[in-house]
Length: 338
Image (tube, rainbow, N blue to C red; front, side, top):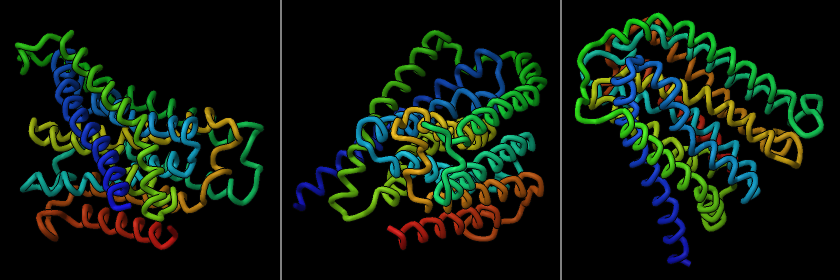
């Protein structure tokens, strides 16, 4: 029995390590693409990086619903990832010594954070309403799915218009930081790293289901905590790599953009889930993670607008400390209901 548990943990960790390594490569190649195309780091982080670093959540969700038939893991990995992505800001704040990241970062991130609050909170409300009645559901999908997709498209349009002037200015940059690497090579490396993320994401829900069985945990707890952390490793790798190349805005845009795309993944999952409206087949406890993520995103917005300089504990400020406390609270609530 002990050997079986060990092997399952090794499978889970192997998926996590592959996702983490590929995520680091993604960051480097995305930065090269940004450098050679003249796009801003924020725009690359918001669109190119956030989409690909959310691939594990997308692939894990599809695999969990179509192959493993564990909807709680599919939704738990999304909601848990939204919460964990915001905890990565605490790590970022700790790594960047000196001024708070909320003082250094661009104020332009407030718009994407605001859209994040709306989308995540709406998803949480939909989960609660779906557990109470069926009026939120059509025949095969939830009424919330087209609304989520529409809101995401509106958000992308608004963010594109908002970033457009900054992108035009960044095109005027002169010196390339990667003269020895061609754009073709950057795109090739980006696609190969994405493929590794996809392959690891396909197997992840199977390892997670086995983990839940041998440890005696339910799928909601495993999906929201362990699978969410594993699928968020690209975001963590991107954040650490961004610190090394002094690309704070790219890292922040990636985390906030990933949360936006994560909610769209819920809509995609609802479409491919053939039994009915997805939220009707999951535990309503997922709403706790959704509302935790929405509140945490609101705190990030406050930090970006208030721009605090002071540090409270171990080189992190009160904004990051609040994010960490909310994450621990969310984890505790999920644990006592596991």
